[in-house]
Image: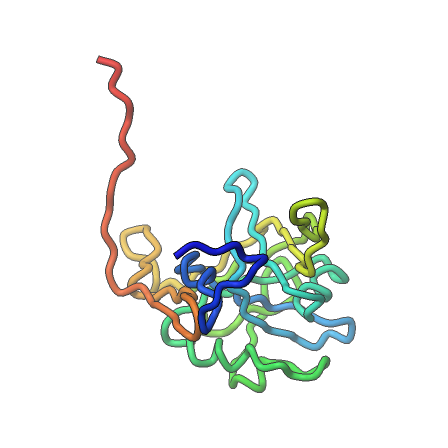
Length: 202
């Protein structure tokens, strides 16, 4: 089949997010203006640069994570490991503003080192970030989207020591969770390696 998104797809659900998968999940913790921790998972998330280390997450509409990050200039990306997947899902609840998803999902907060928002206790890893840019992307013809893209520089990295083996982060042990389409998720339980080829002029 072929369809133009502007004309609809005729399927029970939009397949686009299933095609663009698996997507890493940015489990974003922030603080509101009163210092109340806020937590939300975002599957529109990724790393975009290593020098400097930049990550971004996209909020469809002015959700708490984006508005808090803009107001305070800080956020933390917590890695979703398989052991915390169900609690990550609980933290996606549409709780009223001012309610901490930490408590709702039965999660404990741990102090970060360089930023004020806490990280999640038990998360395999966490990235402490300072906001560098906030933008609202446009479509064809300059059409304004309702998305808010928050970019931040990683200023500190926490790794659970149990996740380090021979100096490498053990993705299988962490069970990194990714978002698929519809209601589906995937966790890493095996990996394979391939070296990037180099051009041999001879």
